[in-house]
Each structure stands twice: as C-alpha cells, then as structure tokens.
Amino acid sequence: MKRNLSAIKKALQFGISGAVGGFVGNLITEPFMQRLNDSESVFDGVLSTARWFGLVGAGIATAIMFGYYYYIKGKPQIKQALKNGGLFGLIAGAVSGAIAEVIFSGIGDGENELLRVVCWGIAGSLLGLGLSKRIPNLGMLRGAGGGGVGGVLGGCLFILFAYTLSGTAGRLAGCAAIGFWIGIMLVVAETLFNKAWLVISYDTGVNRTLTIGAEAVTFGSDDNLSIICIPNVSPLAMRFQLEAGQIVCENFDSGSVSYLRSGDQKRIGNCTITVGNSDLPTQTEAKVPPTFISAKPAVSSFTTSKLSLRLGSRIIPLNPETQLSISEIPSLTSAASNGVIATVNAHSRDELLLEMKNLSDRAWWATDSQGDMKMIEPENTLTLVLGMKIEFGEIDGEIV
Image 1 (cartoon, rainbow, N blue to C red):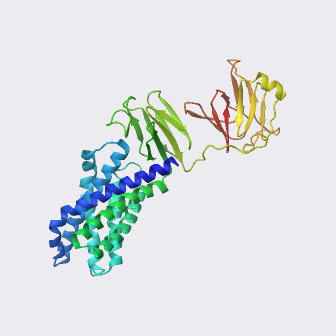
Image 2: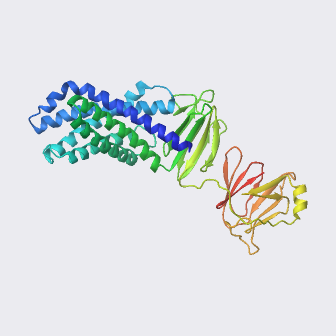
Image 3: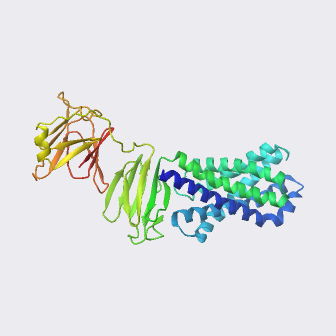
C-alpha cells in the first residue's frame, strides 16, 4: 500500500513537472512560430521543427529532472536539473522533432492527424530514452516505452487543443499535455515493470519509492556521495543493489553485507527502508499440520525450553534432542528415510546455546535481527538466537 501511494505521488510530481517544462519550453519558442508556419521547403520545416521541439524537449527534460531531484532530496536542485536535463533534452528533442517532421511531411503530406500522433510518440520515446540515462535504474526499455506512450497520449490532447483553442493557447496547452503524460508514464512504466524497489518511510510520515537495479542506491549524510541524504548519519552509510536477482545491502558502518528478501526492513537515521522484490516471496504465515515430534514429552519441553520455533500459529519448544520432521515442515524432504529434517542439540562450545542441524536435502536461509542473511547447507549447523528468521523452503519460521 505504501509503495502504491508513493508511486502515485511520484507520478503526479513527475507529470506536473513535465507539464510546466513543456509549457515554458513552448512559451520560449512562440516568437519563432511564424517562421515555422511559413516554411516553404521540407528542409526549412525540418529545421524549424527541430528548433521548436528541441526547446520544448529541453524544458520537459529539465523539469522532469527537477521533479526527480525534488522527490528524492526533498529540496529544489535547479542547477543539477539543468545540468542533467537541459542539454540532452535539447538534443533529444531536436533529433526527435526532425525525425517526426520528416515522417509527417514526407509520408503524411502534412494532413494525417493519426500520423501526427505517431510522430509525437516517437518524440516522447526518444526523450524517455534520454531520461533513462539520467534517472538511476529507470532502464532504457522502460524509459523509451513510457516516454512513447506518454507522447502518444499527450499528442492526442495536443491535436484536441489545437482544434479547440487559438494557435498560441493550443500549442501551450498541447506541449504541457505532452510533458505531463511523458512524466506520468515514465513512473507508470518504472512501477509496473521493475523487479525490486525500496519504500523509504520517514518518521515524519513521508514515503518515497525508488527502483533498485544494477546502479546502487546509496544512503548517507553527504549529498555528493549519497542518492538519499539522511541527516546525522555517516557520509556514506548504506548501499542497496540488485545482483544476480538478489537484493544486496552493504552497511559501511559495520562492514556487513546482507541478502534481503521482500518485506525485510533496515533502519537508518530518521527513516525505515522496506525492501520489495517481485521475484521473491514475501514472508507469510505457513499453513502446516498442527503436530510436532520431540524426543521429550511436550510438558517437559515447555517447562525447560528457553527458545521455541514459531511456524505460523504453532509454537514448538526447542531443547537438546528435539527433532523436526516433514510433518512440521512439509516443504522439505529428509535426506534419510526416517523423515527427520532437523535436530536440535546443545552448542558444542556453550551449553547455554542451542544449534540446529540441517538434515534435509536442500539449504535453508537464516536472517538475524540485524537483517544479516546466511545460507545453511545440508549437514551444516545453525546457532539459534532470539528473533532469528529461518526460511525452510516455502515455509518460514522464527525463533521466539
């Protein structure tokens, strides 16, 4: 829910920014529009259209980058927006405008409105492709696809405004519509087709969503080192990245590396970071039979146990010689014929601690209370600590 609400807010922020950029970009070009309309040759038309949409594209790209920086930083970054949006937006807009004019004038003879919409789609696609190089982990396909759809939707409104409003007003409203829909659809494409993301929940109640990918998402107090600036923490405190389908979190303060699953959380400064991954299952309560096997009677186990294993709604006391079978955890297969998939014993070096040995045919994943994850291969043992979560295949357990 937090992700969806944050994505809606992000889309509206990008859309409004794009609309302002399209409006301002066209406003700058209005003094030159008479020359565009009076073009006598295809070359003059292509050159004038390239100049026109170059400025419009620069306005849209700069404004969307401004919206992006304001979204992740919480403050205006005009210089950065101009630096990373202005020049490439001008080039992308000019190239796409020239291509669109060649197609429109050469094939459509300047009369086919459907072809005009397709041309706006081409222009939006190239702008989105350019923006994908500036917005981390947006991706070229998502950028080009979102920009293309936004260009088509905005182009439809551009034609509508051109017919219902006066020339200048129609162009201003039309370019604003194109910028609005390009901004909206970039976020829609990013949200629908990304594999992993972070929901950043601040103590103030503000939520932000960022896509994780090959480019690292960094947190810290130094604006130059961190994408997300968090006050009163290390200059570079934490980094999240998607590697080989796994979400990796590196904590620079502790030097630890964690492998996270969907729903896992990290706390840093004044915010909580929740991980989402469409390729990994979220932690859910497991539906398993209400029985357990123990070498000791249940009454004795409850009175002597300090730790227990919670599987869904059941609590299984853990003592030395406790055994777990496929009856408790049907997602695993025993490596032996007796059906036992785990045994609990006293720790080899500290009798006050318990350890669990993996007797199944597959590895487990254990995550401690700090979020650090490790794999327990068959025949290996795991030292049990309070709050530890263990993934037994498709069934999740917790040490309580």
